[in-house]
Image (tube, rainbow, N blue to C red; front, side):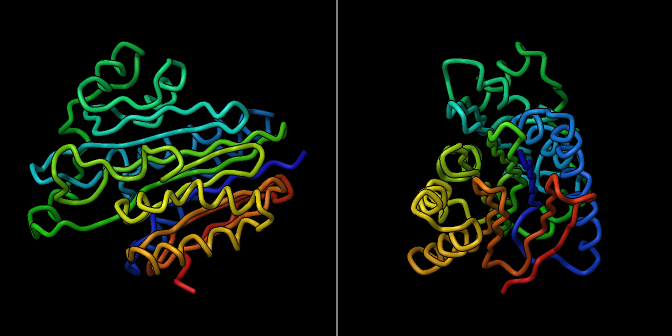
Length: 292
């Protein structure tokens, strides 16, 4: 059976000097996931592997290089979901971990779906996740941006959707949130059905953008419902983003895979960095797509 994987590095305005780092980072991530899918690894494994690459890259607002809250600290959100049994795990407002997506993966193996703040970090420690001093996640460029303006801004998230050879989907998201956010603020990224969704009967979705707008329309679940009703991945993505802009405003982007492994990409931000590969492709392709 055909496999496919797609990642995104956020929907926002990407300056000329940042285009190549965004493309290169997305390519590294998608190839990390594709390497597992080629060896008959699971979609869940591929999504986690791809997002870990993005969390290590300060080009992106996730893990190391996350945006800083109003107190100049890094608080991160992440979630992961698989489409066979609809299992999901998520963390919110977590500090001092290298890979929030892997902590979310551990949460999936408990009776819970979402852990937050200090409870999430204690859980990460219990499960042997990679911990660090929270200050080690602060990248100097983000510190300079935080000091230069007190404006609440930014809406970047990284994400991945994969379909494996066995017909199983998985989706994931990871983010540092928005610059100068209030401590404890949680966006759409760790919320199942809002920032991400995976269901073998439809496909998988990962979103990025203005979390408060995405939440109001539960966009990820909306997109998978559209696919169930006969829309292809691309049209379902475009209609959801257009509906959000019309109903509540805001900028967002999404990546989608449907049951045939077809790719859907849509956004109303200036740019959306993404890369994808399928089993029919010898290598991945990356793009910093401009608004259509």
